[in-house]
Every structure is written in C-alpha cells, then in structure tokens.
Amino acid sequence: MKKAKIRTYMLNLTPLLGLAVLFVAFLAFGTMRDINISYGLKSIMNQSVVVAVVATGAIFIYTLGSFDISLGASAAVSALIGAMVYNRTESISAMAAACIGIAVFIGLLNSVLASVFNLPVFVTTIAMLSVLNALVLVLIKVNGTGSEIAVPAAAVRAINNMPFKIIVLLCFFLLCVFLFSFTKIGRMQKFQGGNPVCAKLSGISEKKMAIIAFALSGIGVGLGAFLSIIYAPTLTRNTASSVGMDVIIAIVFGGMPVSGGARSKIYAAVIGAFSMTLLGQIMVMFNLNSGIGQMVKAVIFLLVVFLATSGQRGKMLPR
Image (cartoon, rainbow, N blue to C red):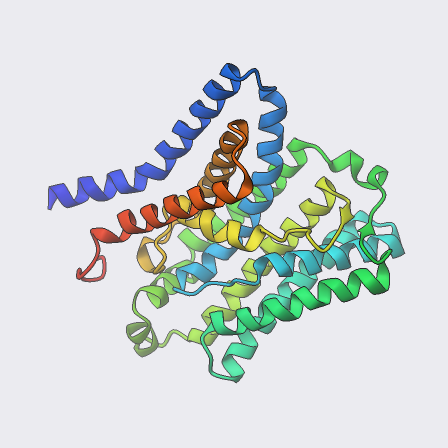
C-alpha cells in the first residue's frame, strides 16, 4: 500500500520535474549555442500562454473522458470574428467579448448537437472541425483581403506585453481551479468521467455536465483567440491551426490521464503547455525540422500515456 502511494506521488510529481529539466536544458543549450536567451524565453511565453489558456478550459471536457478536436478551428473562427468586430467598433472590449461569445456558442453547439443526435461528444467535434475550417476561409474571403483579416498593430500594442497575458492566464486558471477543486461541478465531472453508469444512477446529468464543460472550455478558447490577436494581429487561414493538437499533447504532457475521471488535474494544462513549448524551442536550437519535431513529440506523447496508465490497468476506481 505504501509503495503504491509513493508511486502515485512520483507520477504526480514527474510532469513538474520534467518541466524543470526542460527549462534547465533550454538555458544550458541556449548558452552553449550562443542563443538570445531573453528573446527565446519571450517567444516561449507568447506561445505557451495561448495553449495554456485553451488547455485549462479543455480540462473540463477531458475530465469527462471525452475530447474536443475542433478547439483550434474554434479559436481561429473566434479570432477572425473578434477582429471583424474591432474593425467595425474600434473597441478592444468588444473584440474580447466577441471572441469569448463566439467560442462559447461553438462549444455549446457541440454539446447540444451531441445530445440531440445522441452521439459521443467527440464525434460532433470532428464534424464541427470541418465546418469551422470552411467558415475560416469564408470569413477571410468575405471580410478580409482574400488572404487575411488584420487589426491595426497600434490598437493592441498597449496590451501586447507579458504582464497582461500572464494576468489573463492567471485569472482564468484560478477561476478553473476554484470550480474544479472546490465546487460540486468539479466533483461531479470527475465522478462522471470515472464511472458514467454510477454517476447516472446517482442523478448526475451527463448532458448537463457536457454543457458546463463545453461552456468553460469555450471561455478558454475565446481568451486564447483574443491573446492570439494581440500577439499576431494579422490573421490568416493558419491562425491557431496547431492549437487543437497542441492542447491534446500539452494536457498529456502535464500528467492528465487520457481516461479522465478522479485522477484529472487542472494544473496539467499549464505545466504541459510550457513543457511542450520548451521542448519545441530546444529542437529548434538543433535545427530539427518540424517533421522530426512532431515525431519526437509523438513518441514522448505515447511514452507518457503508457507510464500514466500502466499502473492502473485492471484496478478499481480510486477511493
């Protein structure tokens, strides 16, 4: 029993240790190869914050034992519509509200469609991915130059700084920690993800939990879209294109079990996002192309999943 607890503790600590190792490796290799460390850290922060915000909201979906593959496309559509709203109103607040509102609407649409057609949530998100990718092209063609929609860089310059982005991430993270760890929403979602049959017999509504999860995820996607506009105010069809897969990898990197349930961890999103970005920057230092980089991430992804699940196969639910 004591060995099992020690093993569980070490597994929980591993993602944080991995982040520390990657950070030290980045500093060491950067110094050896005469890389501008401060510029590299700034780039890491800008990339990580967007993924961390989106992944933090997505934790609620993954806790249910499901996943949303359309998060990247949803962020792109939200960012494009947010940019269009700014160009009409010249209001940063209106742009932020549009980003969040559209993302929440898309998330709720996913959950409602799944309920209406009685389909697994991830099936509807796969269909939604195609619809949103097509919508991105339509929005750019109708409202942009044909290849982009741009917000004046001067309009977002005042908030295009790291303190503002960290504050956005921290506020959303603390909100999610509160809901996930200190309210019945988090407890019910862990129960739902761990044992759907028992949860249903206990009176927990699967549809209600899905709606709450996708609404919270939508807020994260909307904030991620807003931060994407701030960082790169010229939006194209490739805006946020990798966010969906980055979120999946980041959550697993952070120690989140792919099955969801009671072992879900809200902090996995932030740890995983920064770990993944650090790993990517280290591979860039060694001039590894994107293909090799994706292969390395895939191998580590499979290894982390194997280590996280190998000790739990055939066991009862956690008490």
